[in-house]
Amino acid sequence: MFYTLSYPNCKLLQRLLDETLPEFGEKFVLKKTMANGPLGMIKTLKMGIHTVPTLLINNEIAFKQVPTKQELINKLKFY
Image 1 (tube, one colour):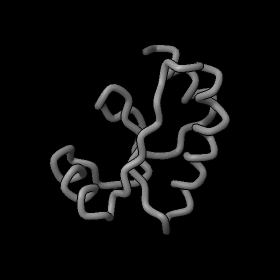
Image 2: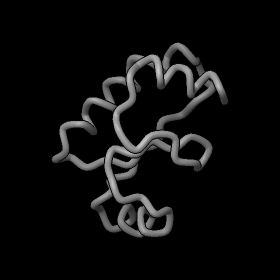
Image 3: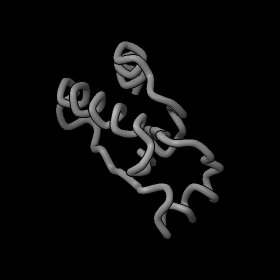
Image 4: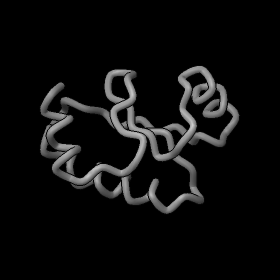
């Protein structure tokens, strides 16, 4: 998950992931990268990420916004 501390939708996505990921057990591990930090800026440039929050699954962009809970569950079930 690419995020910033100042954008409220990043907190919404974090909360949604906290609610949803436990349903999938050990299948997914949440890794967070602050998009406006030095390392995050390099990663976002390399990956072409221009918005936050952006959620990647298996190093592929899955969402560039906060999905609904059902959209997130459907995407996670796909993997």
